[in-house]
Length: 598
Image (cartoon, rainbow, N blue to C red; front, side, top):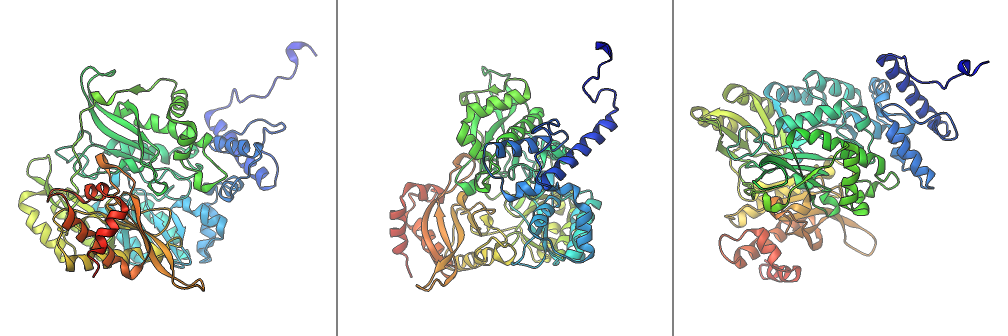
């Protein structure tokens, strides 16, 4: 045989795009089957490197094992069978009215389904709503799904999202597919995925905004949905866009935050509106996202976010779920090394701008998510509704949809404050809209306590929670309102576990659930640890612990004592609770509280 006729290495040249995709999918499936059989992935000891949309994840898993470390169970489950390859089995379980075992319980979260036993013997389904904005028809459709297949209510979450609860196994697929029929999705809203993308709730209608975040949130949303390689991360991932509007989006609490800024003349980039890049927020782990110094033209946000996530995919911890977040890569590497890796992915340098060339941003209005506010469109208004820690009945949802359709522009805007806004209401229809809202048993006005009252699901619906958060939040608000009157807003956040879904560390007052020992026999009761002095925006700060092991029934009185101490000892009537709490140390605060002990 001549040199010219010797066998050449096999390549994929000559295949069509469709054929290449088929082969990549085939090899990806073979990789999963080899892993399930205890075999090494193809490429280790011969056979070629992993290919296909899951390749980077498989490589990262193999790299971890090659270093002598053990993968955590969710990593093994993802490798044995990718959740998006298992939908047929979800259908089979639904047909049998059968709830999942642990591995499938993890997998079904890729479809937004969380089996929440023992708190409830049912599923919860979480949606994806980019920038938190959906139409009246979609909102009403979610209400019908909750009525037909759920518990007859929904929760607005702290990611400007909706959750449907009390879904029987038999109805799991009905819910997932019903949501899709509305033009919405629940795909990727749980487990090791990029969660619902948040944005300024008043985007496009806010007189003060620098940037309308809607197109950028949508761009990232659809980019994630249509690229399977962005699923199955080492852990969950949060991204937020803030347009510098009146209502905060809390981008500093996210893994990636894009904050709209105005750059002045003389900077290293032309003057104009940019996004500032902040990284590493995870308040449950005591960290606020930090400014990288990087600025980018808004249209590049999706490309930059993609590169950041891919560096995380390759280097995030797959052996310890508690350390498997972006923060820990940044802590280990430092920002300079991490950004260099991002720039390598992008194939270009990122622009940096000194803060001296950035105009100061106005502080968010902590009450603007409630009540009637003029839009930048003349003669139109948004109306913010007060919800009881995010809960809505299906009748209320249908009523809100009708008001938005009849009197507004048809949009319903969810906020990270567990409430919603109806936008585009003409001046002459505001009175009617408010009246109809009140007719639903809701309100547009709130006390300084209820305006910033946030609570996660708690142990009535979440297996991780150690106490009843929503019930305790309501008890605190009712008690304090009956005892004193506040003239400045105070944010109180209650969370049920270390996951900190209600972000207790950024509240003026934060409570995290615990089990309080009551005797030497090991008996416990529900309770909370209390932190103070957290903040957001320009005052972004992690709160510090003030009290431990407060019994649930004692929390209202303790909050009252703390607020009385604030009112009696603030420097003047303009001093906010945040400033008061951070001006004094914890010993001083507890001493002042004792002076108001009933």
